[in-house]
Image 1: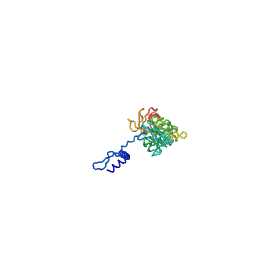
Image 2: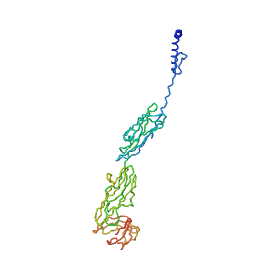
Image 3: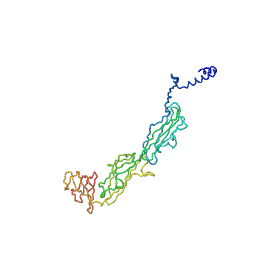
Image 4: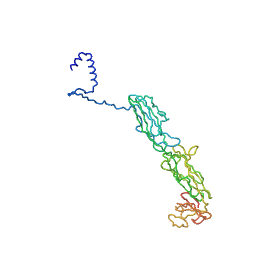
Length: 375
């Protein structure tokens, strides 16, 4: 201690520098340092607080965006969406870059970031409260679900920041019309009796696709075939979804000779992408090939059996007019060959002689399913 005092006295100028150095050192000592009663040195310190990073850019459509169901077909279909990045801070952000990971069905419109019509880019300085955009598209390659992720990064105030959005979407089937019964369809044979009751067939038109089909035309060829509105619920300009509609086709061979008739039922429609009408390069419409055969021309008709509501099973000599009967009507040709003609409810509305069911020359006007025929 004495030597220290002598040195300090002799080196007063130096001592002042030593003092300054010691004082400076004391300034950077940890807080709370000092000598304890035991002569030892102790110190206490606390870690400096780390400020939370403030998000400066807000990406729209979080946390995920669903492009929905997009039809898979030709021409290829795309769904597009514009995402925006907004600077919600008080300082600019820059070096904006984005990428897409996951399924290749997601991409930037035009194939390059930020997508055609977008204006976010690496050189853009985005001022506070300003926004920029990115344009993405979804093009499904199959009828299943696809996932991806949009990732965007930018330079904020002192640190790099990034955000992401989950991308969802699926592929859907175009509409496809089907019919029950399927093509070809053959009507049961019928005697060729002009004006006689026709055979009828209800065709059920369904849709095996995932979108509505819009019917644009219904047509039928073949002189012996007729569209019957009574059993038809399919309408031009109408749609077919999960519930089928119906088309009734009646077969009535008018020529009194044995013959085979052929025709085609056609249903044109739009499948959600293209018209199925067979025009130009368009796909063909739904078609059903139909046919029917008429047997030998009938000489006369007979009831076998006749079961009137208030009559015995055996045919009576005469029957009341305008009375409903449940009966099977058969046609008999010149050779005496019987052919089934009609089965159901009939009503005789007038006659020109007694109802003798065995008389070949008997003439009766009857109603069968409200269709007049001569007997």
